[in-house]
Length: 511
Ligand SMILES: NC(=O)C1=CN([C@@H]2O[C@H](COP(=O)(O)OP(=O)(O)OC[C@H]3O[C@@H](n4cnc5c(N)ncnc54)[C@H](OP(=O)(O)O)[C@@H]3O)[C@@H](O)[C@H]2O)[C@@H](O)CC1
Ligand SMILES: Nc1ncnc2c1ncn2[C@@H]1O[C@H](COP(=O)(O)OP(=O)(O)O)[C@@H](O)[C@H]1O
Ligand SMILES: [K+]
Image (cartoon, rainbow, N blue to C red; front, side, top):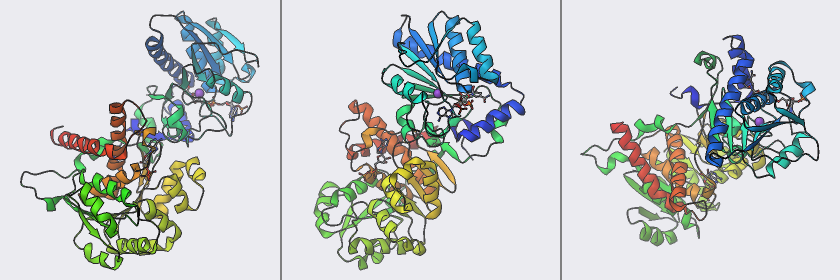
């Protein structure tokens, strides 16, 4: 597997196993790891504070619970004191409950003459910057009092917070908020990247994520099996077909997109236009006759076939490379018959939008599967496919994407903040994208792009990985161009996707 260790995503339990192995197999003392964690946090804190406050002095409050996460916090406070920073520990957890390394760290912190104030209801959080060392990977169930009200009060200061290992209250495994969670400006995570930092609420709460491996030897990582990774686009550089000088259009595939039922022409148009800009040799659209004029006016390069009778579709698909079905497909009899023809063609299939909704109401269609499928649901569509609510999907996006892929024997992309790609038991998380993408049409552009990549010879797994990354990365580029998240248009992504594919192709050729 080409994924490097620094890209691996872990559950809290897996990181506990890594900690255990580092301590018991490699003989690194737990307190040494805690010291390294504290030092790494302090280094980061100083870098940020230099940016934020320049040479001005600042007041730091370190909020500590009563586990090892607090231990890291005590080290940060002691180091700050040594450097003459105005620092105070707010002990939210009962120091009487501290034990082991955390107790040692507490005693060391006391020995540095750090002021340690027990939390009281009327205590004011007055610092310029906070370190959140309340709860780490040891969090179990919804955040209890008094932690919950401290977190609420901390968030209401709107001051910068550096979270130690994970924002307190965020579930390390799923990225859901367990009742209430700290909103951090930055998070520094140790030994292994926690999955929950990168998806769902994690995207909103972590701020900039930094990773410190605490110099744990590589050997330790080999003993903990894992199936989740941050998506690394460089893995796909060699997948793009080379443009030889004597190439002809037949060498780069012929993609057919089916959709655009009555009064739903926009989605299929955007999908087809995206495909056209992603390097596929030929693009055809099969749609309702009323959509033909609009589509041809916008994209004369596309062959548009008006078709009220899906019985014609099998003939139209002969010799084609791949299919996209769903954008603007609707759920009419026409829509269903189009879907049946698509499934029956045996061509690799991207199923999106109403293609997925039709599959959800008629799961027996799966029995007719003859080719590789790539499903691209947003959480609502995923919920219909799995017969649960979209909240349940979001509560564990990793488990959901895995279930989608296995239940539908397909490659699956679960869209949304921190999109997840699952193929052959492996989950990859696209750590790109932004809230400006939460507008209509973005998914249509993705489905067209994915179809174009498959038509050019990529497997559904390769297309899903590369395409999901390209799509969200291009949206990040667009945000830089327009200066924010407001008013992004899905069609504006298309030229940026093309630019990025070309840059990748150059990179794959010349390094
Ligand atoms: N050597 C190592 O292992 C290293 C570990 N490292 C650090 O240790 C962290 C993990 O430490 P950990 O396992 O001690 O757990 P931690 O997150 O501090 O929380 C435990 C405390 O939380 C409490 N609590 C739990 N649930 C709660 C709830 N719902 N609501 C309220 N309270 C709740 C629980 O209370 P109890 O339930 O016991 O009353 C207990 O007091 C990890 O994130 C990293 O920062 C690094 O230093 C690197 C080396
Ligand atoms: N907050 C967000 N952060 C990152 N990506 C997002 C966010 N909201 C939406 N997206 C992305 O935008 C696209 C929206 O797709 P979809 O919901 O199918 O839109 P539509 O059906 O309108 O085309 C997906 O790729 C999704 O991952
Ligand atoms: K924390």
